[in-house]
Image 1 (cartoon, rainbow, N blue to C red):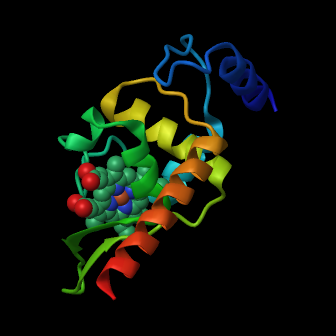
Image 2 (cartoon, rainbow, N blue to C red; image 1 turned 90 degrees about the vertical axis):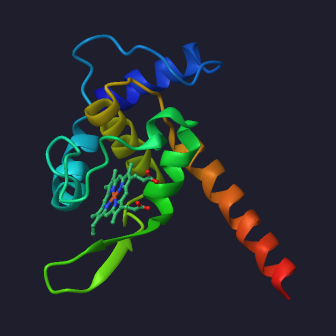
Length: 140
Ligand code: HEC
């Protein structure tokens, strides 16, 4: 795939920098498709809502925070039309797709081009698992 090849080249060339400027017109079609198919129902075409993510602190935090939320969900609650409240579910996609949709949403809402790879998602998953295990041990 053209996008994957471009990403691979970028990863190789710029592996020391997490935030880069992708050249204008770079497409992330899979990221857009996942956002539209899955995220849009809760966050709207521009992140405006029903659950707005436009003014969130997350856009000023390290990119791992965003990956963690997309991969594992979030605890903050929103009211559903049937009167119940629920948080954000973990996205039911592969690590490569989570990387793509995370890049897409950062571009869409924060207007920032970031490079996120499948390896970044794997790393965040491993850290998360370790920290959950650590908490579980501490609680016993
Ligand atoms: C079923 C509804 C739902 C779907 C689908 C959903 N979210 Fe969310 N999202 C939420 C809720 C509710 C919150 C608020 C959680 C909070 O404030 O902790 C949230 C919060 C967020 C945040 C801000 C988190 C923070 O701590 O500031 C981001 C970014 C985000 N979602 C991105 C996404 C992306 C990207 C997708 C698609 C892969 C997605 N969401 C899919 C409901 C959803």
